[in-house]
Length: 301
Image (cartoon, rainbow, N blue to C red; front, side, top):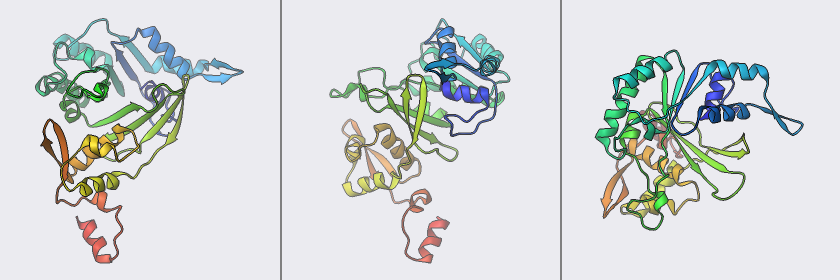
C-alpha cells in the first residue's frame, strides 16, 4: 500500500507497471506511529548508491507535499459526526485515503456481523462518492486463530461478507513462502465494476519491491474441476487440485459465482459448489469453437 501511495504522490508508475496520475494521498493508521510510516516511505523511494540507500531531495520534497500521514491513538467509529467531520477535513482534495486497519475505524462493532459492518462503512462509501476520493480499507482477514476449522485455524477467515459487498474492488494479498527469505507475496485483484488486473507475485528484498507477472488462465480449469466432481464440491476439495495460492483459487470461485456459472450449496457445516446452467461469455471466450455459428452464438450470449 505504501508503494501505491508513493506512486500517486510522485506521479510514477505503481510497481513500475501501472501508470497513475499525480495526486495527494492520506494515510490514516492505528497500527504504527507517524514517524515509522514516514521512515518506511522514505526508504521505499530511496535508491541504492554504493551499498547505501540514498533519497533524492526532490523526491523527498514531493513525498512531503503529497502524502499526509496521520496516526490515531484511539479506536473511532465512522458513525460519529465529529469523526466524519475530521474525515472530510483531512481527505478533502485528496486522490486516495487509506484506513489501516479496519478494526481501528469501526468502534465496538462486530466485524463478523453484516448489519454492523454496513452501518459502519456505508458512510465511508458515501464520503468517497461525495468528495470524490478513493477510500481504501486494509483488513487483516487471517490474523486471528479460531473458528470451526480445528486442523488449520489460521485458514479461517474473519470479517463479514458485507466487506466485499460494500467494496467496488479488492486486492487479496497472501504470503506464499512462510519462513523463506526473500518473502514472496501473491496479489489477486477483484473488480466488481470493470476489468480485473492480472495476478501478481511480489518478491520483497529488504525494502525494495521486485515484481514478476503471473497471469494464470485458471477460471476454466477451476470450472472443470467442479464439473468433473459431479456432486457438490467444497472449496477445500477444489484447492487440493491446484498448487496456486488459496487466495487465487478463492477469488476465481467468487468470480464464477458472481457470473452465475456456479452456485453455493450447504454440505454439513461447509460451503460446496455445483454447476449452474448459465453460459458466461467471459469463460466461453477462452473455449475453442469449431464453427462460425458457434462463435456468433457465444458473442450474442
